[in-house]
Length: 380
Image 1 (cartoon, rainbow, N blue to C red):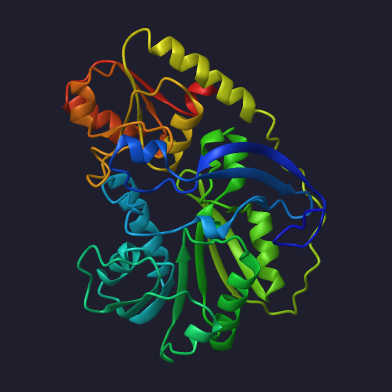
Image 2 (tube, one colour):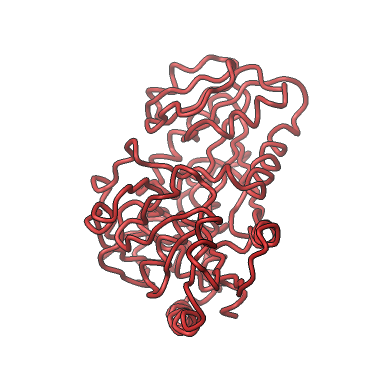
């Protein structure tokens, strides 16, 4: 019997299983030998029939090590930076100057976006994996510890906003994580802002590439509302980033909340995931007859795609730290756009449709001639 980590119900079913997936996707792997011997684990993706939460039932937190090789920066993309700025703008819509806390701040890119406005007096980040790779604003301080009720006690009294972006999907036990955050924001009557992938988008688009080991907890708007309500928070959920992500604004509930989940919803089907994978296996075999095939995107989507679909000759990525390196397990080389053209790449499959316009412009400037496809659109 498997218990849902969000609503604690036991009605759930297995969506998919995969053996030998890399335990991390966003890592710098410098040699082919290291890539081929990269640590692997098993996925067992389950979906709760009561609250729609999706999780990896075989996840082992001890397998994860966010060490110095971890690098998930997408700051090289103007599209992503624009999205980051837009999300900062939602927080900055409140009047006046204020202080904020970012839980799981990474390398503090989002805090830098906020402080650049001149509206943040003090910004405090929490992230044990923070490496200080880039200079940060003097108003920003990062605490290399996990946020919990104990570390929260050391925060100053004049905090006005709490945010946490792209963190909760990495948390195998989301209830204690939200419990600590909810206790803090309720004690001070603060707003909470969260951002995380929307698993319903994954199912609607048969995005088989979006199931990977790092993301052990995947939420729908429904399961997010259930989790927050369990700890006395109300919320408003909006789709952002082309629907791939959810933006959640939460606040202390006006009425008492309970743990009873609402009635089951008419969830979207996941039946097309296997068909989508089969489509791309056939498609890449056809494309390779014309010449080498590259994917654009050396992060999680690309790592999963190259692992599951044979025929990827290279992965293009704008992150200079990844160029010249290899994808874990598949050992697919990661190259710059210029290096891909030198390899004679004739077809490019874009892993994230949000970047299509940006990529098309870049390729036009390089006078590249070939076949450009997007993952979801071309499998429809």
